[in-house]
Image 1 (cartoon, rainbow, N blue to C red):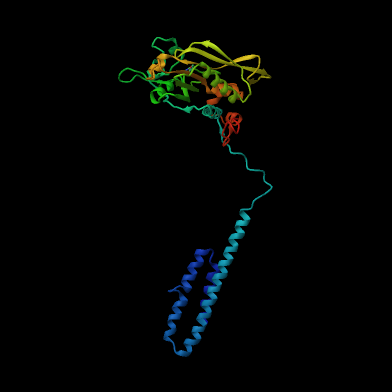
Image 2: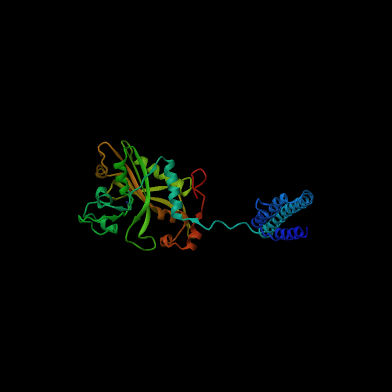
Length: 357
Ligand code: DAH
């Protein structure tokens, strides 16, 4: 009997010492499992006489029950200790201020890009794209800019090294090549805008070597200048979020349009802050015109059958105007303080219905 007592003491001690569920399970298996100590003793009962067997059997069963309930109790203790521990470490201080806003912000160019896409999308324009690295043909030739044309110099083009045939690819100097690519890829009626990156070797307060433009193109059989003026007016009202915008179409020259116009809108300046639509001053915002027959032909369409208009404007520039950002160079420095100041809240997607900005 005394050795059963010893066994009991040692088993109960191991139960008590088990520091977690796994250790406790190991104790249970070593005591009560098929090959455990108590089960081993049970097997030995067969070798005893009837009297001894009875009393030893009772004692073993009692020990078995005791160990089983000790294990259960220990399990309960461990659970409670774990809960206590979690309560102590995971407490919530309800007096803390609200979590700070997400640190990321939407860059003004992305914001304006999205706004412009929304506005023209509403007018029925699809978004088209073209490559940043263009052939001379798409960037110049197809747009009615021949080899000796001064526009080639004005564009401050970045040229790539010549290929095997001597021809040089260029970083596109404007989004206008997408006009040609769209005419090649689509059947009229064509109504597209092409926002994207453009490149010119220029660097000052209002020029960066990489900048963004948005191109517009409408081609069908009957589109005329009245449509162009209406589209641009609708755009300006929506973009600057005003009821009326007074516009001025100034005769200009671009090789790819005939006639060509630059578009100015009225603005008012007070304490360095600009408001658009009405006012005493004019601000130039874009170039436009009726697509030149040579350009329509270069796009693979018949200029006797098709006509239309095109326009191009600087995305960074209209972002500057709308959101009052003075120096273009800051746009692409990646300075977090600048982004924090001029950036827009993430997840606030501009829509015409919900408000653009
Ligand atoms: N491609 C011209 C530029 O980069 C902008 C432009 C002017 C585009 C008139 C047009 C247009 O489509 O009709 O300066």
